[in-house]
Length: 160
Image 1 (cartoon, rainbow, N blue to C red):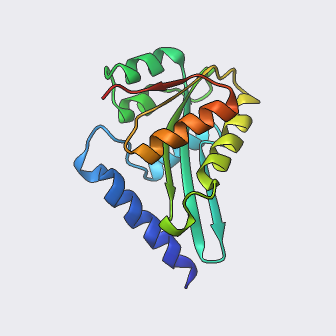
Image 2: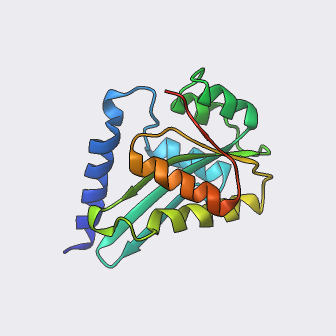
């Protein structure tokens, strides 16, 4: 398989699973979004890949407890969460935004390892006290719970 093959599959997987084009509440990962994420912290975007390209992608957003509360109570959406999170701030909450893994690579711990590495890097710079997420699947719920257990951080799920 060519190096672009996995990339194309990952992009299709993201479009099919999250359907971001038809959901204005979800974050669209474009150039502007990636630039802001990098400005917030270098560990916000992670990838596991091999010679054929990406096998897993992870996106996390360090933010504040106040914004976490507004997001988990459905007062603000995902796009607003990122828009309201200012680079250069002190972050005490971490949004487990998305994890995508190619089907044949699932259940191998790739997303969990990426998340734990990202959490460790962000905690080196910020006093992260909570994890939170917006569940889209049973597998996502399981992953978030596993990450919370291993990181020793409490986990809060968005209600809707």
